[in-house]
Length: 282
Image (cartoon, rainbow, N blue to C red; front, side, top):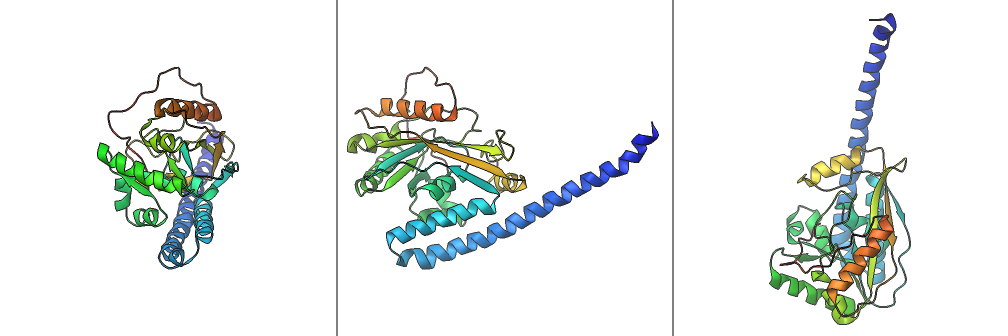
């Protein structure tokens, strides 16, 4: 072996040690800040949100969500949502549990999530406190209950957000939009606002670090995110869609709009109504 190769070995070893130390320090720093921020969120939800007026409550929730992203090293690049004077149904592709906080930092919405999230330590309680609706998957009767709650919120002028794919993906493709939870918008003739989100590395390449897939745990997903030097989260909104009286066509139109916002080819496939309610994800 040439003498230069032996000379380079210690420097390569030292570089590897330094990289591992930097990664450990980044993780520790962000996790410590995250724990403090969660504690602040619990105090905010328990002591402050119940006593402030609705506009102030909405601003506090948005500010907490925006700071959570910064704590995790996520830079939000979001367009302003359109100004709709009445209630609306926001539909978006679904990549990660982080999606909720991206949207929450941008506009005030009530999310529809799977009922299992309600049992998650701390996270479930915070979601409930900030107005999340919880759907029991696989129960058609529960979809009717959630639809009624969605109608009441939208009639009051609130926005409700759903992930019509029914589960998360890696963000590199778009699953079929299921129409079940779009029914309240059809009944109320309420605008549907398509949105699209994606995650990138700091140098602009597509990133899979935030993807909540392959049965990984919430803790494993969080470790992936805090291990990154940083992430850029992009959130864009399409033009509002007025229902045409049929939720299947509405779902297909919203899906096509999201696909265009993401730069995906829109598949030429007919919309379908699922056998049961969608498997809403966190």
